[in-house]
Length: 141
Ligand code: THU
Image 1 (tube, helix red, strand yellow):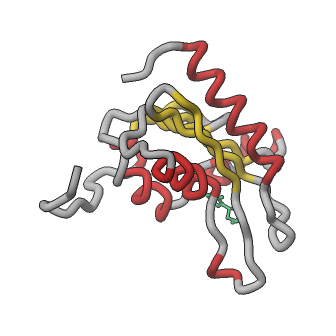
Image 2: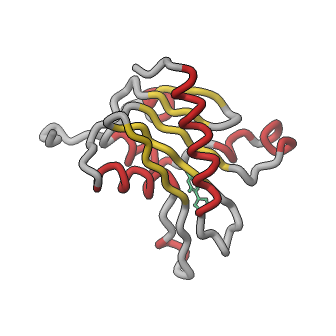
Image 3: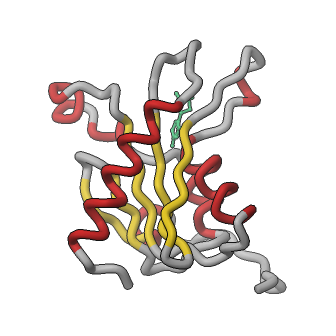
C-alpha cells in the first residue's frame, strides 16, 4: 500500500502535467492520469474523436502505457480534471471523479486497496470507488 507523501504528490503533479497533452477539441475538458507501476510513472490524457463514442479517457491511455511497458500490477493512480474551476469543485465535486468504465479498467490491474488519488477531491481506495468489481474467476496473472 502506497503511503509515501512525496510519491503521492509526484503522481498528482504528473497527472496534472499530463492533462496538457489531452486531445479534447469537442469537450475542451482536459484530463490527465498517472499510474505508478514497477517503480515507474506512466501518464495518459484523454483522446477524443469526431465519432464521440471512440473517445478514450485519460485513465485508460495511462493504463495502456503501463501495460504495454510490461506492468500488469498498478501500485497507485492519480487523476486530474484540470479544467474544473474552484467554484465547480465545491458545487460539483463529481466532475473530478473517474468514470465508471475507467474504474472497471483499473480494477483489472489494481487491487481493492490500491490508492486512487483524485486531484482536489480526495484519496480513495479502489474498493471505495468500485465496490463489488466484476472479475472473472479465471483472471490470468
Ligand atoms: N474523461 C476522462 O478522461 N476520464 C474520466 O474519467 C471522465 C471523462 C474525459 C472523456 C472526455 O474526453 C472528457 O473527459 C469529457 O467527458
